[in-house]
Length: 114
Length: 112
Image 1 (spheres, one colour):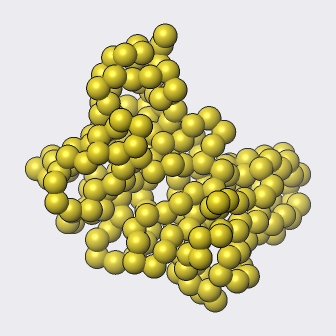
Image 2: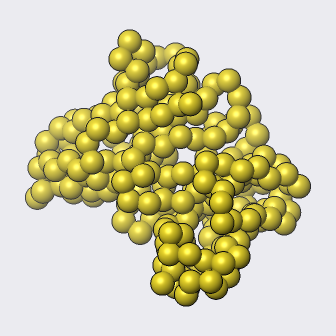
Image 3: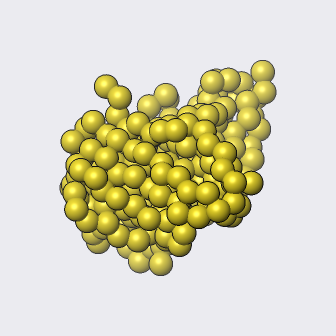
């Protein structure tokens, strides 16, 4: 069965600093990869996705993520964090062999210090 | 453009009470999903419906039932609520052939 690991439960960064959130997955092949963001009291919003092709993908709100097959990773980055980026971030995978069952990581809570 | 709408937003139940969580989408999607979100566990799939008239169990279906009323609506029912069902419930939908799921704002349920 597939699984997703987000090793950092909480991360605190200063506004304007760079950010990297880690995501590792376990699956027999390359899955479809996603990052979602959940602002307080809100539902999940898709930040970006990787299906195939260029391993560096751009998303909304200035986020990007890089897929590294050798490391089974899909880390999320942002060069300069804004206070409004404080939220919980979820990495998720979807099997490429069919089906539509997303598997989520446990999430990383981002706090931004002003 | 409402997207995925969930009602109610908040609910408090006593152990043993029943209730139905409602979900409707206006994107004409074929597939719909129910997840629960618990601290430190991410989102886990309860049930899903690949198309109108079909439903399948997800990772944590025990204690829940679902109904795909029509293409727009997918409800989740708790017949006899238990404290272990205290959680935030999310509904999502996706189009067949698309790998992107769109989520509602969630229902916060407390079972006392």
